[in-house]
Length: 337
Image (cartoon, rainbow, N blue to C red; front, side):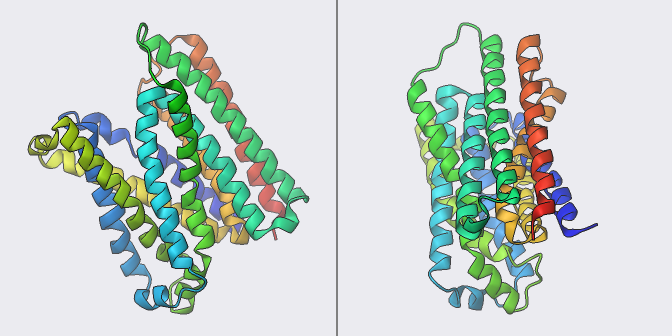
């Protein structure tokens, strides 16, 4: 199997893992959202990153000390921005619902998270078959997620007849800002390339070197999530819920963390396999595969039950566009050098 095919295979697994990481939340019924998200934050952003990084990147302190051109500070900055975006996600969901928020976030993230690395790493290739393939794929990703957003809104209206949401404009703004911030994960990997290079020079394997980026990025992203969850715990007086649920709820939060951080690690591995175009080609593929996997999982778990035939048909149309985007982006890998 060549590197491009290997990278695409890894991305498929990463997309499925990322799309399914929230499924355990369906079973943490004795906790409020902020209880589960705080436990997830602790495991996914504060516990797993140092365990993985210290176990795979030798001489880590020297890697960070030798970082050039402020690469470490850039990664920390992108991590902080991503953490704030996660807070915006929760607020947007409350205002406009999960389906529309999810689609707007992934659409904006796919577009910005692809174009900025393209202009940064290969601006001279923009008007080439490879550049055209990436741009075409991004357009299809945007079209696919917006069609899925329409389907999701119709599903929500069918399942929540008579209910209404407030602050729709604010919710739309927050969702778009969240999408811009979500792309900071990819920016951290792109602009953190000097850290990856230092890690490789100091003995890290090529497939593990990107872990040097995830540690500072995740730590920085943890802070806004922690503060927001702690504020919600105090505001809603839900801190006492940690006393119920027992070990099973903590175990479910750990499963969420393993799936999410595992998908992030796999994304990093896929960019290595895809070469210098990894953050450019891999990011829209990753976003597309998350939406496709989430759609299939939602149908399998009965989330579209009783929503009617029309929303489901529209959803399948959106998924079809995303599959086409995946096909085009996969074919684009043949033009990379």
